[in-house]
Image 1: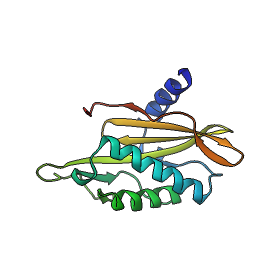
Image 2: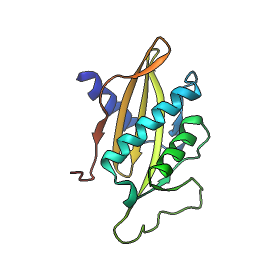
Image 3: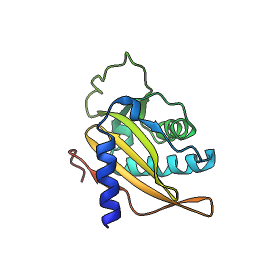
Image 4: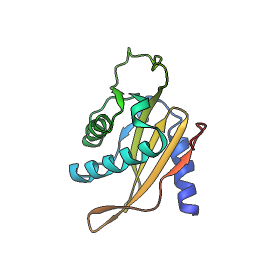
Length: 151
């Protein structure tokens, strides 16, 4: 439990910096692992943010396999997704919908663990993955810290 709490707090603090800290900082993760984790991420988002009523606007350029797969998965799941462009401003999503800025950080707090942190509006979701025999295995449940009320 302490490990998960540490992950959540450190992810939150690392997410409070400039946009240059967003992205994938895991140099060893292959494209198949990134695709699997992107799928897991999409499922976590769908539990908290209803796909047909949520627009997501990336706050960072998408230049890695995880990000590209995440965009595809989000669109397939019914999310309206706006990719990063410096001139994009967050606009109204329309009646009955919500729009959230979205950014992610993938890092390696240790040689045998990779952490995924999502910044969705003012909310933070984090999950650690242990690396076991070259496979990325969830180290626990997604942690959530946020201001958004989810039933």
